[in-house]
Length: 511
Ligand SMILES: [Zn+2]
Image (cartoon, rainbow, N blue to C red):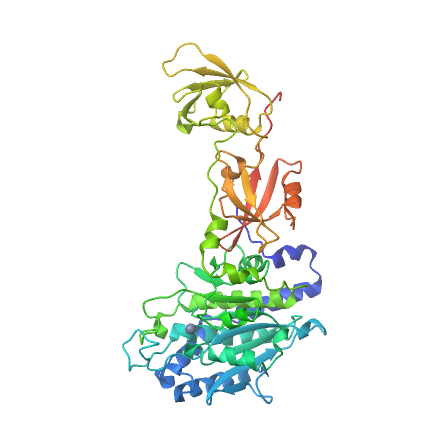
């Protein structure tokens, strides 16, 4: 039932030949990213020759030399000092910078930054290593993985030959392990005006993808970033864990501090973190390949967007811990439902439905229905199926007469119930979230409702109804309440896009 829904694919039906060419170019750029090439970069960077790439050390400088060579090979435009790729600071530390100019005369002044630190901790010290000290810490995951990914991304993006409206700045930072020094230095002495940076994406430790799960930090630093990433991730993509916490643990934080929308991709910590055992053979190179391809899509989408959202100041407060995320995403308690009882589905037969619990102060309780009663008919219609009963409870608008047989049997008695609340058409309670203005977040799914039968879950985000998008709650309701028995929702769950067909109940006959 699920199929892909990246924006680019949907556009195909109406694609002009230039759009089709663009799509083909993007695909070629992504396909040029391979696990093999990532692996060969990582093998060089995380080789003992570079002695753990400590910023300012002999090994660190040698690593910089290799990276500059790669930039030259790819044919990138330098964006360092004096027409070169590098920006030196603190003596012999150096950032390495290149730029891919955008195609639009106006928008190309705006810049999407993709960065990764290439330094590591050398032989380790008590303050930066979990030991054993004195041995080379190769930092294959931290952060030869992100550095290799960036080289591959740069090579892929270069193939697009500027077919993106904004410019893309590629930065390999030095001195991260000594306190985010390289990115800090760049922000103080930017080689491209700081105000031009519209979004900064950081890759740090992307080499240990497990269960296909990628952590993504910073989506709340600008509206709709989550949506943009998820749409590119598509249906068969990675499982994305969108975290709210923003910490001073990598270079994205420096940009965040300057109120620049900032993202970080990260595949999580592990036992080899900041130890000599963080070696190349433990990298998941296919995982790095997936992350790199997603990076290309996200960077190009940002570079091509008509408008980029501004920084959300609220993200500073929201980023302090994950508690506010828990509050927003906590499901609401289940409602008792319109009738106020539950029944045993397995007892479904001609003999009616057996009541398994009755909620207090509900129509069922008021009508004197008790546990063990069997509901055998509804307005004279014999109840033969579980689903028919659900339908009646969801959609009935008039008072209904139920025939009930008590636990001990005997003659049916009749009770009248007036169901609570309006008919349940869909069966969800939702909220809006100002960080994601183009979606609604499901907070509750009513048991036995069409929404539950369709498999919707609390925390699902609805992006579109029958492919129509919306920007307000009113618009969403209009789409939801259009006169149709079948709706198709575009839903995001864990960063993946699902197409969820929703079959609504018919109103009961005669009402
Ligand atoms: Zn790192």
